[in-house]
Amino acid sequence: RISDFSNNKEKFYSDFNNTVKNRTLIVKLTNDSLLYPQDGAYISKDTLYAFGFKKEMAKKIYLKDIKDIQYDIKYDISSGMLILKNGSRLHCKDMVFLPDSAVECTVEYTSNENFDIGKIKGISFRNRWGAAAAGIVIGVTLGTIFYTIIRATHTYNQGTNENADLIGYSGAAAISAAAAVTGWIIGFTYTYKFNP
Image 1 (spheres, one colour):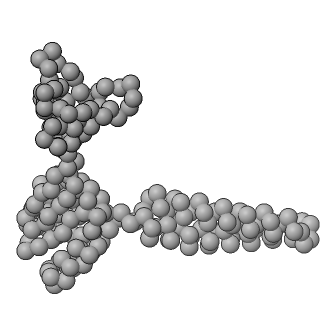
Image 2 (spheres, one colour; image 1 turned 45 degrees about the vertical axis):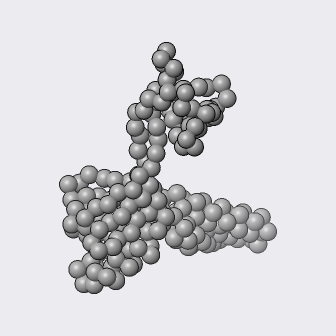
């Protein structure tokens, strides 16, 4: 959790802007609602500029205005890209062709929004690669313990045995890889607190 907001606002904003570029964020407002900008954000003059909010809008488009339709799936006419005569491209889903020579559909688009910092409780994101590195460290530790137990067990029961080394090394490598993948999937969550 990073919350040195009150000490040095400019440094806090600079750190935030450098850290959250092009990340998928979770913005929690002071009314506890959540927003999910997909393309990062930055702060300037006590305003948060957030990018990549996915939105949908119902729209009716006349066939005379459509130049081409590129369907997402070959024999499925329910979704695709409408290329209009004016050059616009609209990705539509739930398309219905109406008898009055029109297409009714849900248009998907992204938008950018601005928020006053006073309305933001916190902003968080996940760092997956940092968690993968931590997973490797934990995995190597657990793998070493696994190897030590296998080696000690085989030495006690059968004397020195190359199979014990093979099993121990293989197990240690598998545990390290599994821990790294688990760390990457879970990720570390970083949170910038603004108005707790």
